[in-house]
Length: 262
Image (cartoon, rainbow, N blue to C red; front, top):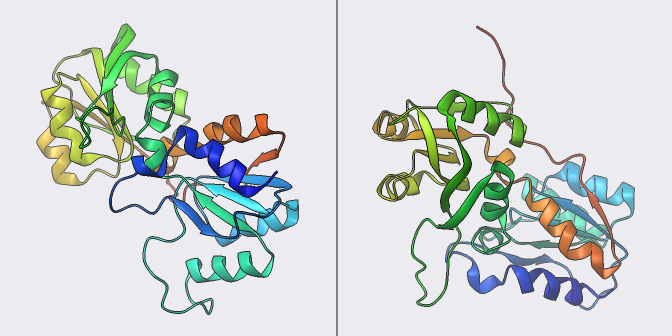
């Protein structure tokens, strides 16, 4: 299977035109005309993930988070990004990333999160900047069955298998309407409130964002990686039907470690 054929399949679901202006979804390293034998799927690109690809004989890595956001001035192993570039080129491994291009579409990160959590009849949280298009960078919908807030928090942690959950007091104790945005989505807290959401699930919120949300909406903050790791499932479901071997990385993990105590 040629790499360009795999990319065409990914982009039939997550076109690069759907990405945010600051993003860098698409090819990171490699020749789109090369033959691909097997693919390693990951949320993040780290030296450990690239070394895993080498050990498994994968000559393509498909990641959610792009390797290259900013230009590299030197490729001499002094940063993790530079080491990844060196290792990938040396071992002839191509790298492709689908980031906000996958976040923003039906069938992407946010609609999958909604499905997993039992949120139904969901719609985009914000209007698309492009007339006539829907932007699912965040979604809002209704639970199949209303839950008490404490029960819903436990449901989120169990369903997404999170290492931690941080949260504020909600506006009301019975949760019916849920908004969510995988990754860093604090900018949409106000949108979630105006859309009438009882809770908003996202990651990477700051102290004052919690403070402002307290009592206005149940703000539920989970680990960034856990909110987006399901990208690997989406990639597998796109690529595996092409007859290409897909492996979900075992080295891919959150960099955040938690001490659980009183």
